[in-house]
Image (cartoon, rainbow, N blue to C red; front, side):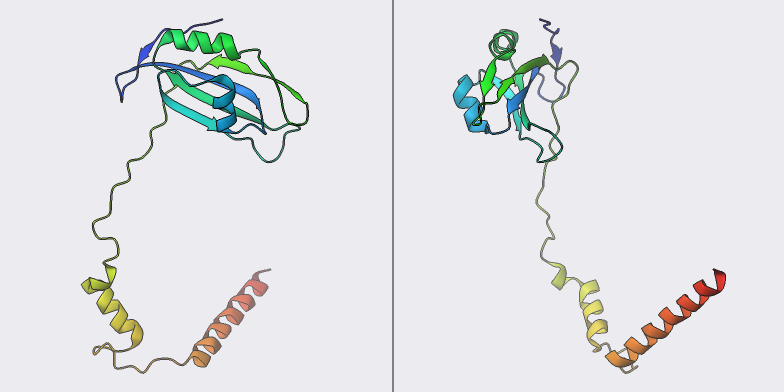
Length: 169
């Protein structure tokens, strides 16, 4: 069994000991996993990936855990690696535990509140656009185009494009 040398995690300045436990039955949920193998020791990252709905004869899940203490990583690897789990249909799954070398924890984007969200109706540009769109713009003295005339113009343009493409082919 390999135990990797700890490295400093840049964002949190914590030692990173990350392990992946794969080949967990697809019928297991995150709650089933935690109930079966007990509470997690000190960690700062836990991700339970559900199975893909297609392409595999027996869908499996994966659990990724970043332990804060190296001894916890070793204990969990000894406990889970090679463990056999039966799913609801009686199919055997052998859990594979791997130490994930040189893996960074995913960086989740910080979602900040937008200060101008929902206030577009109050901006000068929108009011100008709305006035022009509704035809109440004083600068525009042209009468609005009727829908049937606009439809005929568009049909003529489409026919012209078809005629041009048929000449080239």
